[in-house]
Image (cartoon, rainbow, N blue to C red; front, side, top):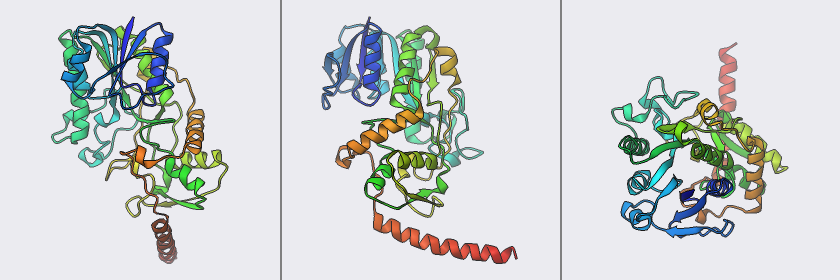
Length: 349
């Protein structure tokens, strides 16, 4: 059996590659060649642009793969380039396809449906869908159309917030860095009550592998995936601080009044929650998580503590570490909160 992994050098890729090798696949790895991971096993490396259909066609040629796993790149280009060249295409999609995540006020009631299932309303049903979300959904529809024309069997996973060592966005770093810097307090938006569905990279990889294991069952479907346990932002912060043996006061301020290190968690103007139902993956694919959320979080925090994040290596990540401004905001907030409490006390007699 032959497998082509497109991408594969990110947080989930090594786990997918290891799982395929364990299953007896001969694995080829296609990527741009910019990040050669010395920790990967000995594989055939194919260098091409996963965003360009002609680049992909040039290196795929007349080769045939039992399964192609599109872990990175432009799914539409990949789907076009491997049409007729594989038995199964496994695609990575994302939760922005669901209505209300990117633009919560575009739907009624506001926000994404809680416990969203795979058949929950998607953005292509909106008159003016957010462009980014519409592009992801369009890619899903394109490869499904190719499937209907007999190009390959196709299935995919809709990733939520993926986390783990070496993740493209180090979500935990706002707390980890503040503990390392000895900060005593941190602004936490809306008292940290957001719930943003997360999935450890190892668990996401397991879902991808389960689709490859169940090609007939999964054919034509996209699956939600997530850790079994989910935490609020406050709970995550508390767990991280305690893991590092630190102490920190988490000061809840309405999100629209003050910036915070958590601004990466939601789109501009958006507010969680984003909570997924993953019962289909469990029932149809036999998916079971391979690492608990608590253990995965601890491993991530330990890695970031030992390997402090160099923001130059994370061009898409823009956290907020202006401690002087943060202290001034906290000072103003405390005065305003005290005045509000006084007004409330007088109103209540």
